[in-house]
Length: 410
Image 1: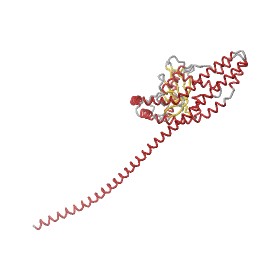
Image 2 (image 1 turned 135 degrees about the vertical axis):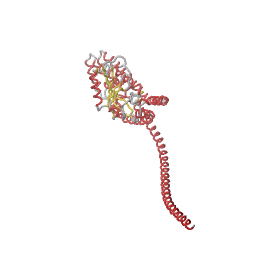
Image 3 (image 1 turned 30 degrees about the vertical axis):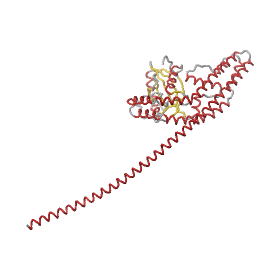
Image 4 (image 1 turned 180 degrees about the horizontal axis):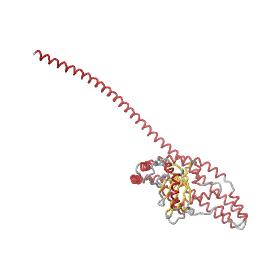
């Protein structure tokens, strides 16, 4: 990981107390080591993942995640490593983000993740705290940011940049406040107070669509990853260590399948990522133009340039957001069609299964009737046997008496 600056440094005694505390905690808490695997997870985290027995189970962020993160459009394996490495290298040793996880049952869920770096002597740990998310608006804002104002817009892009390793660091508010011209500073505050109703309206329209898209994607992801779920389920429910190699080999055999899945996700979410990156570039250009305007000695010209630049950026932003909304709508329709096709396919399979079950029950009923007839025949045979035994005894007795009479006559 290189040199790190952890947020907290604990003594050995404090570390032991800390471990006891998180073991009893009602929050889902996990510890990530420098190899980016979970060195410990408490009982509440195990319950969230539906893991019954924690003994001998070793997990990684990628192993308990779907192949891709639908709200970010990134690969789970490389994405989880990038996020943890980012928090290890950060100055304050803290970071929070939204991530989609997968239970051993195959069920998917979103959680807000809070990472904190801890150091004990020479060892460094990353505390990972999960809080489940049920509100789709929170998932939406985690992927495209909150666009209530220009300042919060750029702050949202800063968090997006930290995940994707972009380098822009200056906010619009700081550009205005750093100006020595009082009139421009007050004008900057007025710009920040402008209410972007058009953006909020577009966001509210796209929220429901993205929510349904996420739900549909979750269902399809659950179906598509059935083989992976079986591997994880069997690995954890039996002996994890002995089955780990089998799981790896089965995943290696699915390379072509994984490649197709990655291409599908890229085709679906790449346009959204490109739009967000374009907006980020446009904002950086907008920021540079504002800096130039602030340096101007003519207040009226500076105000005009800032207004013109703001209107230009707002137009670009609205256009990009509209394109994003259209793409989400197309993606939703495509996902609905896929869901309908899958539903028809499984309905057909279910009908075939019902027919087979009906035939199976018919065979069971026939077998029961045959067994009942055999039982009755057996009872009759036993009765005949008893009668035969009685007749045999009488016959034997008669033969004995007959033989005695013969002897006497002779």
